Image (cartoon, rainbow, N blue to C red; front, side):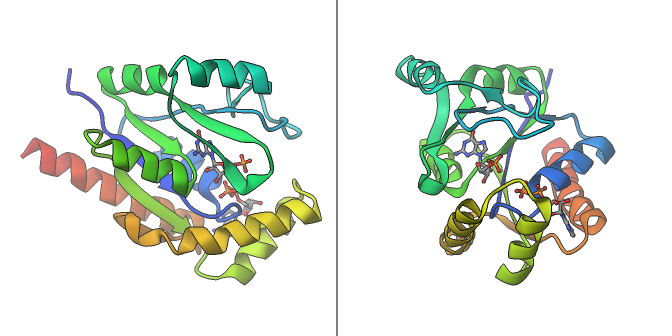
Length: 194
Ligand code: ADP
Ligand code: 5GP
Protein backbone atom coordinates (compact mmCIF):
# COMPACT_ATOMS: atom_id res chain seq x y z
CA UNK A 1 0.00 0.00 0.00
CA UNK A 2 1.36 3.43 -0.95
CA UNK A 3 1.65 5.75 2.00
CA UNK A 4 -0.68 8.76 1.89
CA UNK A 5 0.25 12.44 2.00
CA UNK A 6 -0.29 15.05 4.64
CA UNK A 7 -2.25 18.10 3.48
CA UNK A 8 -2.49 21.27 5.57
CA UNK A 9 -5.24 23.83 5.03
CA UNK A 10 -5.04 27.05 7.02
CA UNK A 11 -6.49 30.52 6.71
CA UNK A 12 -8.35 33.11 8.73
CA UNK A 13 -11.49 32.14 10.60
CA UNK A 14 -14.45 32.74 8.31
CA UNK A 15 -12.44 32.35 5.08
CA UNK A 16 -14.46 29.25 4.24
CA UNK A 17 -11.98 26.47 5.10
CA UNK A 18 -14.58 24.05 6.50
CA UNK A 19 -16.92 24.67 3.56
CA UNK A 20 -14.14 24.14 1.02
CA UNK A 21 -12.74 21.05 2.74
CA UNK A 22 -16.19 19.44 2.97
CA UNK A 23 -16.78 19.94 -0.74
CA UNK A 24 -13.25 18.84 -1.62
CA UNK A 25 -13.72 15.54 0.20
CA UNK A 26 -17.10 15.02 -1.53
CA UNK A 27 -15.81 15.68 -5.01
CA UNK A 28 -12.18 14.60 -5.21
CA UNK A 29 -11.02 11.25 -6.58
CA UNK A 30 -8.13 11.30 -4.10
CA UNK A 31 -8.45 9.20 -0.93
CA UNK A 32 -8.87 12.29 1.28
CA UNK A 33 -9.60 12.00 4.98
CA UNK A 34 -10.15 14.86 7.41
CA UNK A 35 -8.22 14.62 10.67
CA UNK A 36 -10.64 15.33 13.53
CA UNK A 37 -8.89 17.60 16.05
CA UNK A 38 -9.40 17.76 19.79
CA UNK A 39 -10.55 21.05 21.30
CA UNK A 40 -11.55 22.58 24.61
CA UNK A 41 -13.92 25.01 22.83
CA UNK A 42 -17.59 24.30 23.54
CA UNK A 43 -19.50 22.68 20.69
CA UNK A 44 -21.58 24.99 18.48
CA UNK A 45 -25.19 24.10 17.75
CA UNK A 46 -25.16 21.21 15.30
CA UNK A 47 -21.56 20.16 15.97
CA UNK A 48 -21.16 16.48 16.80
CA UNK A 49 -18.51 15.08 19.13
CA UNK A 50 -16.09 12.88 17.19
CA UNK A 51 -17.25 14.27 13.84
CA UNK A 52 -16.43 17.99 13.92
CA UNK A 53 -14.06 17.79 16.88
CA UNK A 54 -13.33 15.63 19.88
CA UNK A 55 -14.71 17.99 22.53
CA UNK A 56 -12.62 17.70 25.70
CA UNK A 57 -12.37 19.52 28.99
CA UNK A 58 -9.09 21.20 29.89
CA UNK A 59 -7.84 18.38 32.11
CA UNK A 60 -8.53 15.71 29.46
CA UNK A 61 -6.71 17.89 26.94
CA UNK A 62 -3.75 18.46 29.29
CA UNK A 63 -3.45 14.72 29.88
CA UNK A 64 -3.21 13.99 26.14
CA UNK A 65 -0.67 16.76 25.83
CA UNK A 66 1.47 15.37 28.66
CA UNK A 67 1.26 11.92 27.11
CA UNK A 68 2.66 13.29 23.83
CA UNK A 69 -0.50 12.42 21.91
CA UNK A 70 -0.52 15.65 19.89
CA UNK A 71 1.40 16.16 16.68
CA UNK A 72 0.88 19.84 17.48
CA UNK A 73 -1.45 21.78 19.76
CA UNK A 74 -2.09 25.50 20.17
CA UNK A 75 -4.24 27.96 22.04
CA UNK A 76 -5.86 29.57 19.00
CA UNK A 77 -7.06 33.23 19.19
CA UNK A 78 -5.71 33.67 22.72
CA UNK A 79 -9.16 33.16 24.23
CA UNK A 80 -8.22 30.19 26.38
CA UNK A 81 -9.43 27.45 24.03
CA UNK A 82 -6.96 24.81 22.91
CA UNK A 83 -6.94 22.83 19.67
CA UNK A 84 -4.72 19.84 18.84
CA UNK A 85 -4.00 17.29 16.11
CA UNK A 86 -4.02 13.68 17.30
CA UNK A 87 -0.71 12.09 16.29
CA UNK A 88 -1.88 8.46 16.13
CA UNK A 89 -4.91 9.16 13.96
CA UNK A 90 -2.73 10.99 11.44
CA UNK A 91 -0.08 8.24 11.43
CA UNK A 92 -2.69 5.50 10.93
CA UNK A 93 -4.42 7.43 8.14
CA UNK A 94 -1.14 7.92 6.26
CA UNK A 95 -0.17 4.27 6.69
CA UNK A 96 -3.57 3.23 5.30
CA UNK A 97 -2.87 5.32 2.18
CA UNK A 98 -5.18 8.24 3.00
CA UNK A 99 -4.32 11.81 2.15
CA UNK A 100 -4.91 13.25 5.59
CA UNK A 101 -6.16 16.84 5.76
CA UNK A 102 -5.26 18.98 8.76
CA UNK A 103 -7.47 22.06 8.98
CA UNK A 104 -5.33 23.91 11.50
CA UNK A 105 -4.20 27.42 12.34
CA UNK A 106 -0.98 29.01 11.11
CA UNK A 107 1.00 28.43 14.33
CA UNK A 108 0.05 24.75 14.25
CA UNK A 109 1.01 24.47 10.58
CA UNK A 110 4.41 26.03 11.27
CA UNK A 111 4.93 23.60 14.16
CA UNK A 112 4.27 20.69 11.76
CA UNK A 113 6.60 22.16 9.12
CA UNK A 114 9.34 22.71 11.71
CA UNK A 115 9.19 19.06 12.80
CA UNK A 116 10.47 18.10 9.34
CA UNK A 117 10.01 14.75 7.67
CA UNK A 118 6.25 14.99 7.20
CA UNK A 119 6.50 16.80 3.86
CA UNK A 120 3.00 18.33 3.94
CA UNK A 121 1.33 19.95 0.93
CA UNK A 122 0.22 23.33 2.26
CA UNK A 123 -2.63 25.67 1.32
CA UNK A 124 -3.56 29.06 2.71
CA UNK A 125 -7.22 29.82 2.02
CA UNK A 126 -8.47 33.38 2.34
CA UNK A 127 -11.05 35.78 0.98
CA UNK A 128 -8.64 38.27 -0.52
CA UNK A 129 -9.83 41.06 1.82
CA UNK A 130 -10.69 41.67 5.46
CA UNK A 131 -14.10 43.19 4.63
CA UNK A 132 -15.41 40.01 3.06
CA UNK A 133 -13.92 38.02 5.91
CA UNK A 134 -15.79 40.13 8.44
CA UNK A 135 -19.09 39.76 6.62
CA UNK A 136 -18.69 35.98 6.33
CA UNK A 137 -17.87 35.70 10.03
CA UNK A 138 -20.89 37.81 10.94
CA UNK A 139 -23.06 35.96 8.45
CA UNK A 140 -22.22 32.62 10.05
CA UNK A 141 -23.75 33.92 13.33
CA UNK A 142 -21.77 31.52 15.52
CA UNK A 143 -19.61 33.98 17.47
CA UNK A 144 -20.32 37.06 19.56
CA UNK A 145 -18.83 40.51 18.91
CA UNK A 146 -15.74 40.10 21.13
CA UNK A 147 -14.87 36.78 19.53
CA UNK A 148 -15.38 38.16 16.00
CA UNK A 149 -13.10 41.08 16.78
CA UNK A 150 -10.39 38.79 18.17
CA UNK A 151 -10.63 36.52 15.11
CA UNK A 152 -10.21 39.50 12.78
CA UNK A 153 -7.08 40.68 14.63
CA UNK A 154 -5.69 37.14 14.40
CA UNK A 155 -6.54 37.09 10.67
CA UNK A 156 -4.27 40.08 10.06
CA UNK A 157 -1.41 38.30 11.86
CA UNK A 158 -2.04 35.06 9.96
CA UNK A 159 -2.01 36.76 6.56
CA UNK A 160 1.54 37.96 7.36
CA UNK A 161 2.61 34.31 7.48
CA UNK A 162 1.00 33.26 4.19
CA UNK A 163 4.45 32.99 2.57
CA UNK A 164 5.13 29.86 4.63
CA UNK A 165 2.54 28.02 2.47
CA UNK A 166 3.02 26.47 -0.97
CA UNK A 167 -0.34 27.60 -2.39
CA UNK A 168 -2.52 30.65 -1.83
CA UNK A 169 -6.17 29.96 -2.59
CA UNK A 170 -8.67 32.80 -2.86
CA UNK A 171 -12.07 31.42 -1.86
CA UNK A 172 -14.11 33.81 -3.98
CA UNK A 173 -16.36 30.98 -5.15
CA UNK A 174 -16.46 27.63 -3.40
CA UNK A 175 -16.58 25.58 -6.63
CA UNK A 176 -13.57 27.32 -8.12
CA UNK A 177 -11.50 27.15 -4.92
CA UNK A 178 -12.27 23.45 -4.51
CA UNK A 179 -11.33 22.76 -8.12
CA UNK A 180 -8.03 24.59 -7.73
CA UNK A 181 -7.04 22.66 -4.61
CA UNK A 182 -8.09 19.36 -6.19
CA UNK A 183 -6.00 20.06 -9.30
CA UNK A 184 -2.95 20.97 -7.24
CA UNK A 185 -3.28 17.79 -5.19
CA UNK A 186 -3.82 15.63 -8.29
CA UNK A 187 -0.65 17.05 -9.77
CA UNK A 188 1.27 15.97 -6.66
CA UNK A 189 -0.10 12.45 -7.09
CA UNK A 190 0.85 12.38 -10.78
CA UNK A 191 4.37 13.58 -10.01
CA UNK A 192 4.74 10.81 -7.48
CA UNK A 193 3.54 8.14 -9.90
CA UNK A 194 5.94 9.10 -12.68
P1 ADP B 1 -13.90 28.73 8.30
O1 ADP B 1 -13.97 27.22 8.40
O2 ADP B 1 -12.72 29.18 7.51
O3 ADP B 1 -13.97 29.43 9.61
P2 ADP B 1 -16.59 28.52 7.12
O4 ADP B 1 -16.41 27.39 6.16
O5 ADP B 1 -17.33 28.26 8.39
O6 ADP B 1 -15.16 29.21 7.45
O7 ADP B 1 -17.26 29.72 6.30
C1 ADP B 1 -17.63 30.96 6.93
C2 ADP B 1 -18.96 31.45 6.33
O8 ADP B 1 -18.74 31.87 4.98
C3 ADP B 1 -20.01 30.35 6.28
O9 ADP B 1 -21.27 30.94 6.59
C4 ADP B 1 -19.96 29.86 4.84
O10 ADP B 1 -21.20 29.35 4.41
C5 ADP B 1 -19.57 31.14 4.07
N1 ADP B 1 -18.76 30.89 2.86
C6 ADP B 1 -17.79 29.96 2.67
N2 ADP B 1 -17.23 30.08 1.44
C7 ADP B 1 -17.88 31.12 0.83
C8 ADP B 1 -17.75 31.74 -0.48
N3 ADP B 1 -16.86 31.33 -1.39
N4 ADP B 1 -18.57 32.79 -0.73
C9 ADP B 1 -19.47 33.23 0.17
N5 ADP B 1 -19.63 32.69 1.41
C10 ADP B 1 -18.85 31.65 1.75
P1 5GP C 1 -13.17 27.00 15.06
O1 5GP C 1 -13.26 27.37 16.50
O2 5GP C 1 -13.78 28.05 14.15
O3 5GP C 1 -13.68 25.61 14.75
O4 5GP C 1 -11.63 26.91 14.66
C1 5GP C 1 -10.79 27.94 15.01
C2 5GP C 1 -9.42 27.76 14.45
O5 5GP C 1 -8.75 26.64 15.02
C3 5GP C 1 -9.34 27.56 12.92
O6 5GP C 1 -8.36 28.45 12.43
C4 5GP C 1 -8.88 26.14 12.79
O7 5GP C 1 -8.11 25.96 11.62
C5 5GP C 1 -8.03 25.98 14.03
N1 5GP C 1 -7.84 24.58 14.42
C6 5GP C 1 -8.75 23.57 14.39
N2 5GP C 1 -8.19 22.42 14.81
C7 5GP C 1 -6.89 22.70 15.08
C8 5GP C 1 -5.79 21.91 15.54
O8 5GP C 1 -5.87 20.71 15.78
N3 5GP C 1 -4.62 22.56 15.74
C9 5GP C 1 -4.46 23.89 15.50
N4 5GP C 1 -3.25 24.42 15.69
N5 5GP C 1 -5.47 24.66 15.05
C10 5GP C 1 -6.68 24.07 14.85
